[in-house]
Image 1 (cartoon, rainbow, N blue to C red):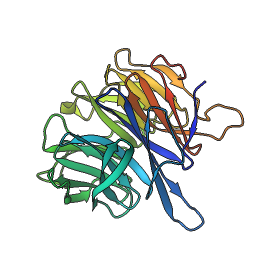
Image 2: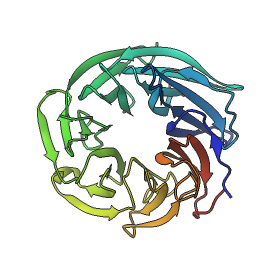
Image 3: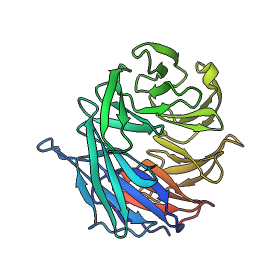
Image 4: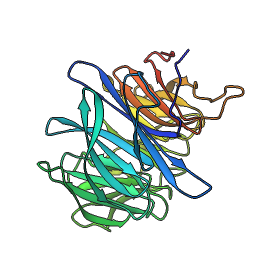
Length: 320
């Protein structure tokens, strides 16, 4: 059986990075809305693999996305929060700890998603905008450079283009996938309405764009013909996150919301395994909502909302 760790607050995002000694570090973000007074809180947990301590965390405002990056050869954790900010932390390895370096206001409202190309960050937020911030690599200072309305409803995701360093893509609750040029913001270069529901995530695999949607379909696009999907995989429930394996990019780890988690193959264009340990289909358990996945080599770290749970799932589809 999988070891299920209680994150206390609802966990909605996870990322991982490998140290020089081969160990994998996991970062988990949480978001809690106190309905009685409208306040929001969050936590960032750091752990080595599944060595998880619910009492050891950094208290922050509610977290919607977090990503590890190596900047100047040092591990940084970048966080998008419920106050619309983008914040950079430096991670100390011994002992594991976070040290805040800089922060910038990106949105009026919630900041949903992060992308980084080595020079600039882009984020999307509940104000419907996509925002760009430049990074000073010497001081780690952030400066917001541009922001514009990207979608009529929540823009859940963004990514830098691999085809053109000046371009970026966004996806939103209006079912639209859009391509923008940073040199002429506010002008949509290309768009697609191929999704049957909101566009929730994007990643690059082999030069092609892979997207996820509330409609439960993983779609593959040739960026040159963004209006038409090249192929697709139907999954059991909404796709909130999908991430390619670092050892085999044709295998995706998928956060499947109400259906838990799955792995999908771009080689066979099918779902190859499922993982439902997080209160999904378990009698008497609090219903989990699969929200985050991250690869630790051949193992997948999984986090879920509502049941506030973290666990590890191995490559062959069995519990760790």
